Image (cartoon, one colour):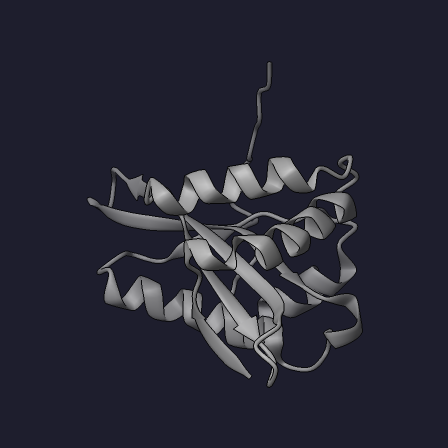
Length: 147
C-alpha cells in the first residue's frame, strides 16, 4: 500500500471515491460535481488530500483535511473532514494509514492537532477513531447552522 498526497492528476479516480463517500452520507451522486469540487480544493490549496493506492496504482481510499485556526492556541488546527476506503478493502489497515498521514501533516505543519466529526450512527468510524488516538469530546457542545 502506498499513501501519498493527491495531485490534480488523481481527479478522475478520486472523484469516483469522493462520490461514493458522499452517497454513503445520503447525498445524491454527482461525479462531475465531485471532480470540480476536488479540483478547486487542490488547485486553490484549500485542502490537503492523501490517497492510498494498491499495487496497480488504483486509488483505494482518501482522507481530506482543511486548515482551520485555534485563536486560543495561536496555531493552525486541521479538520479531518472526509475519510473513505472502498468497502471491499475496509479492515485492511488503509484507514489507519491515511489517519497516520494526517497526523504527520499535523506534526510537519506545526499545528496543535486535528479534529473530526462523525455521525453517532457511524459505528465503524466511532470504533476506528479511538483506536487511532482520537478522544471523544464530552466537554463541548457543537452547533451547526445552515442556509
